Length: 272
Image 1 (cartoon, one colour):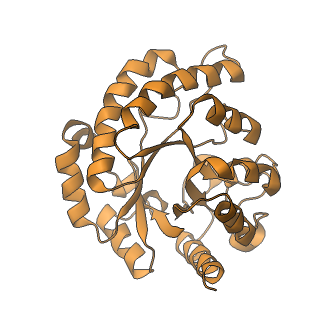
Image 2 (image 1 turned 90 degrees about the horizontal axis):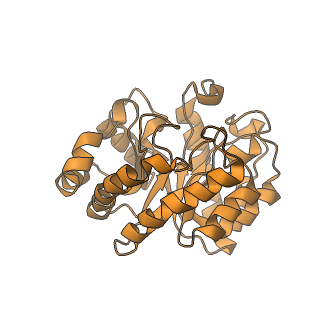
């Protein structure tokens, strides 16, 4: 396993600055997306994906470890649980996969969607499975793994439902962030059952009621988490995702210090 950092962790830095900082910290990869000053140009990515990927790859001092792709302008817009968005999303995803393949990103993660109208959770999951089928077919020959991130405020908020999604959509993996389950009160051993489907992993400390907290104030046992992933056969990227956002009041931590603490914790675990 290798450590990366999410570009959206540092909202006031450009993409080049985040890449330079990550390299200075000895972090090995960079997750990219469409947010804050480090945002990729979504229009260029969707219209000239391979040319744009080559440009970004040449600029960055580190490999791109993952792309976070958001189909619409927010969590609910063009979400996977809305069948009306299926054709437009599949069309965009062709370009997304070309970008990932050209830049060398092994994974792309997308969100599962939300409750649309009078949907039940099971109906939302069923629609998501149908939406994923063409996306997985498109990805099958590209070498890029499609990951879905279960997250608080989506419909996919329990380990059991996340496992059901993976069972119903063969080939999909999870962008697994234990914090999104810990905030809702799930125990770490309950979340561990999802390690078998991990395709990308986010790291930040959390506790019930707090999506993010300081490393020494949360409930997640990271050495145990690393070992669980290893024992499940996971050998991909671990992305430090300490953020400074209004979402779920994640505004109160020193992002740089907490990122360094995660780095040091992982290095100590990885060193024999």
